Length: 223
Length: 223
DNA sequence: ACATCAATGGAACGTCGTTCCAATTACTAT
DNA sequence: ATAGTAATTGGAACGACGTTCCATTGATGT
Image (cartoon, rainbow over all chains, first blue to last red; front, side, top):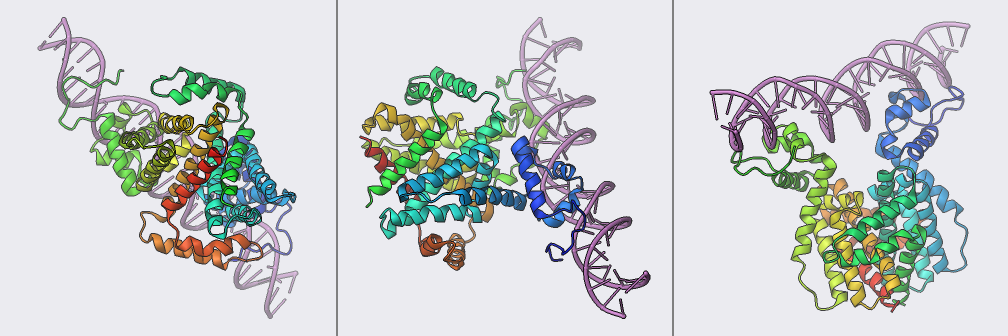
């Protein structure tokens, strides 16, 4: 009943949770969330779905493991930053970039916000707040605000990817959205129509960091 | 082929998109997102799934319509607030409360972030930024940051509801989470273990508003 | 009265996550 | 070595889902 790895390998290409997770990530990256099915996974691994279930409890655990895999890599590559403010930006940017490459991670983060990989990010963010001079009582709220914002952007990226597949024409989609906004009734949507043009020449990453900076500015005002 | 409402009703309890959406909301509120199936909906409306599809294109449209229904009510009930700062808090709180009552709305907001109902919220937020004295160039980023934060919290509430059903013991869940955090390795999670106790006696709404205030403070620093 | 067509309800299809189980392969004790 | 036990495999089968299909109903306009 134990799930330990045997001393000698059963076959050269023996199944293992690691191999399954890697195959799952490949499918998720190439075919999106809807492409990951146990049938597709079994086909890629040249096995049956029953064999996969011996190593993985269910699809939720598989998605969680895949997310852990990506997040762990991101957090490991995180170089030490000079100051706490830069560190927060680096962490946030690392997560953002990872979600940019693997949009399904954003959806999964939303689905299990307090899972291990999220706790690591949460803790990393929180550690910097002390260094930033944030009062003890406010650190929890500040860290939660940062994480919620990151999760919000993550979810939006995921849903963008879900709708538009793998980016045939990112600028085109933006232009179409901007055009749609501009056509709206200016009485009903005065703000949206006004900022529609900004949707065209906007940089996702810069906009994300602008939000982080906004929250950081608010946090620093607490000091 | 047209979907217009006939002059005379076919039956007293004739189907209509409105009646279908209302039934869907009842199911979503009582049984959660996973409870809403076309079979359950057909049973509640005493009809077949084919009849429903004559009024509604697919499940996505049904969920979008249900979300619109809730959001429209929230935005309509929004009383005029004295100042722009209070107005932003009121809008955010209105959305938060709605998601608290209908957690599935949070998940749907994430799924279709640029749908009509989201645009309404986005526009309402943006309108207040002008009054707050935010520079034109920064209004787009500021409004997006607020919306992303709200969507982030919305998604988390939705996933909490998905995991813990309809609140048998909210305080108990919080206490269990706090206990779990406290037990983590303090070397690996210094921040989480430190703030674990704050998870116990924390108020969701207050924490949400604290995040809004943080972003508002950052926005006001732009002035 | 009849023809037309919006509207209905339920059977049927294909796909999914998951479970089940007979068959196979590796390990252990003798 | 060899038998016996346990780990591991692969694929069939199950139930539920979203969706499509279609024969039937009933109101409307002529």
